[in-house]
Structures are given as C-alpha cells and as structure tokens.
Image: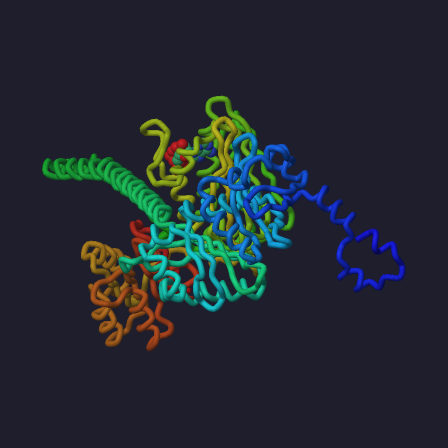
Length: 639
Ligand code: ADP
Ligand code: MG
C-alpha cells in the first residue's frame, strides 16, 4: 500500500481497490504472523511462509517432507480431510478450526481460510489458541458453576441457561428456554423483579435483587440475582445464587437468639419473684411474730409492752411499702407527680447530702452547664435516683475512695441518635454520675438494671437501686444507660425530655392546712377491700365526718346520685366494670365541685398520674398512714 500511495496521480479510492504489487505481497508473506501456504492437490506443501516455523517450530524442510495431514490432531483428521476435498472441488473455506501439531508435540488451534486457484490451494491460518483457551474456560465455568447463569432478553425469554438451573430447580433446559422467565417467579415477587429489569434496561446499569423461583416440584427457592445488561442493548446476563441454605442458617440463628432471649427473660423473672418472695417472707415473719406477741400479752392482760411490738410490725410494713414502691418504680407504675424543674438547682441543692452520703474519701465535683433547660419530673424521685447512683459510685470506689462527678448538659438528639437510644428525636437534659471506681464487666453491665441483680455481699445489696432508676427515667419519658469498663470507672447517664415553659415555683404549692376536725361534711368511701374501706371510714368518722361506704363503682355512683357527698375517697382499681377514675368523672358531671381523693396501689393506666388530675383531686398511695390520710382529706375539703 505505502508504495502506491507515493504515486500522487492515483486517486484515493482507486488506490484502495488496486491489487498489491508483487513486492508488497512478498513483504506481507514474510512478515505476517499468520501461517500462509500454497498446498498441492496431493496434500503436500509447495510454499510456506516463515510464520510456520515461528509458530510451530518445524523447519520448512520438515514441513515439506510430509503431507499436511501428518501435522493434524487425530481428532481433527476426518473434518480436515472433508474440507480439504471441498476446497479442492472449488469451495471457498472460511474459519475452519483444527489443531496443528508443533515440533515439541503440543498442538495449536488454527483458524483457516482457503481457496483454490491455479490448480493449487492457497491458505492462511491464524493461531487462535489463546482465544480458544479463554472460550474453553468460559464453557467450563458455564457448565460447572453452581450459580444459575442465563442469557435473556427484555422480551421475557431466556436464550441460554447453564446446567446449574436444572440442578437447582429441576426443570429441563427446554422448559426453561420455552417458558417466559416471569413464569418461574413467585407471583408476589414478579412485579418487583420485572420492574428491576426494566429499570436496568433504562439505566444500562447492573442490578441486584432477590426473589422466589419456582421448582419443578412446585415449591419455591429464594434466589439472589445479579443482572447486567449486554452492550447490544437487547440482552442481559443473569447470575442467580440459591439462598436456601443461607436462609435456613439465618432462621436457625434467629431461633437460637430468640430461645436465648426467652431463657434470659425467664431467669430475670425467676430472680424477680425469688427476690420478692424472700424479702416479703422476712417482713411477714416479723409482722406475724409481732402480732403473735401482741396476742399473747393481751391474753395475759399485759398491755404495757404492746407498743414495742406494734412499732416492730409498723416498721416492717414501712419497709414492705418501700419495697413495693421500688418494684412499682421499676415497672413504671409508680404514681409520679411531675413538676417543671431546673435540674441544676436540684443538683446544687443535693450536693451537701451527696457529700455526706459518700464520705470524705470521695471527692465530689459538680459540672453544671449554664443555660440548662428545664425538665418535667417528679422531684423527690429524681433526687432519689441521683442519690442511688452516687451511693453505687461510692460502693464501687471502696475502700480507697476516688472522684465522683455529677455532670449536667443540654443534648439535642438527631433521628439516628434517638433511634439508638429508643427515644423520640428532640431536646433532652442530660444528668450523669461518673466515678473512678472498679467499673463493670460487660456481663454485669448487661444485667445491672435487672431488679434484684446485685454483686454485693448478702445483706448489703438489694439489687433494686438501678432497676428503680431505670423505671423512673423511662416512666418520665427519658432513657438511662451505662458506660463502664473494669478498672476504668463507670458513668451512668440519664436523659430527660426538655420541658418548655416556666418552672413551677416551689412556693406556690398550697400550704398544708393546720389540722382541723371535720364539721359534718359527708365523705363516700369506695373500696372493694373491706378492711381498708372500714378502717378508712372509721378514721374519718373519728375525725368528725359523716361517712358512707360502697364496695364498687356502680353502687358508689348510686349513693352519689341520691345524697349529699362533699368528698369521694375511692380506690382506682375496682370491680363492677367501673374504675375509680370513671366513677369520679361520672359524678363530676352532675357535681363539678365534688372533691376526690384516689387511693391506689399504683397508677393504673396513668388514670390518676399527676398531669391527669384536675383541680380538687388528689392521690394517696397505698400503704399510707392515718395521719397522711387525714392531711389529704382536710386539705381537699379546706381548699
Ligand atoms: P445494689 O447497689 O443493691 O447492688 P443496684 O441495682 O444499685 O443494686 O446495682 C446493681 C449492680 O450494678 C451492683 O451490684 C453493681 O454490681 C453494679 N453497679 C451499679 N453501679 C455501679 C458502679 N457505679 N460501678 C460499678 N458497678 C456498679
Ligand atoms: Mg445500689
């Protein structure tokens, strides 16, 4: 070519069609990497180019000494002979593949083009061994892959599937190639899968999805797909992996985790009931012994020493009340009386008490931040919680002491933080008690909030401190968590929701009225527990009130409708289909000024929680003492 293009008189397209000159042909013959030969009709080589020796290692003389068939792989002899005869008869041959032997005994794949001219056969052969290797590799992968491989088009039909399809699904290749692929998808998945394919067709980007594919037996197998479009724009390649085993393992794991959770739960419940039973048995034993002593002394007519035993019984009752209070706190059912509060003032007010409680070996530091937001909490309960945390900190720093830090701060939780803490996103006030004590192992930290879980020696730990803190914080709409490492100290952090609005001045709590006796006002006592109802009635009668009684909601309401009643004293949990709150609400429809005192074991359904109370209503938590009852009643009737 280059020689003709030197001639400026030759137009460019004539040049393209011009036959190469002899010298060009000769140069091509010598430099071509393709095998070129002229073969006589008897099968012997007449002429060979140097590529033969370069590719196969034979010398030109060795090649010319034998007919071409000597150099052909035994398996390719028959096909080679057939095409040789066809070319000899005048047919042009293109891209015929056979294997030619090298001098070192190996074979190379050659792709032939041949034509008969002038009574001889002219041929060129291209060494395609490398491409054949890659192709064979692909074929092997296709055949041996455990993944399902397919080529398909957007019209909905697969054009090729590998044997894994039959192994995984049981369908024959024919079934797979003649039915639309959507036929094999679970009806619930087909829409999404086809949409993913359409999307891939539009974007030209590979995609992944999972669906259930029909098996020949009629079941479905979960398959994870990776699908990529072919450059031609009409086909795509899909690789599908059977996820059945993976899913089964996943399910087993979930089941095992669930069983473990259940076991932990049962253990915690066992610990809880055991703890309650133990503590109450002790209290009951003390009360029972005290009452027995009272009985014995009474029988002997010896009333002088009775006071001692009565006090003993009362002490146990008070301890029992504290215990149930803590349990209710943990179960988030204590009667809370939240008030808008400045936490920094609360902490400052407690500092002295904390110092005295932890002793001189512990250095107490308060790190409060200016501009701290307010919270709406039950103040005595928050003080109780802080004190509990400080005492735990002191215990963890025994006997050498250390540093205790009470830290406060404002925190705004993003959606992600909030999710992690199981709280709504928003503003919170943080209160943290940190110590430099022994710290906790992960196992202890995981159980520290369980009721009755304690690592302290018998008689020293109740295991109710942190469980109470937990219940209180959660009931207040917050969260509490522990950060601790053995030897690195512990930090327990509480979050409370920010309260917007004014802190109630503690001063505006109404002053407790000086005790004054009732003057004939009418009180209705509704309680299904007969002893409680009768004692309450007796106490109020002694205080000068006129007292009526009812044992359930409907009969109480009947009394209210037929008589003058100034104060309703009612249990909250009542039989007869109406709870105390409902009785109160119904009664107030006709008498809006009716005063109401709820007495309750716990705040059922938050019906009588602090913020659900209206003016002229109050709550008294059982067990209570006579003086407390008297104060509440006077206060309600006096105001
Ligand atoms: P108690 O103090 O009666 O043991 P708590 O519920 O207050 O019960 O605490 C439970 C357990 O959590 C403790 O026994 C202790 O093992 C661990 N714990 C609590 N606070 C700390 C702390 N600050 N440092 C190390 N361990 C602690
Ligand atoms: Mg404790």
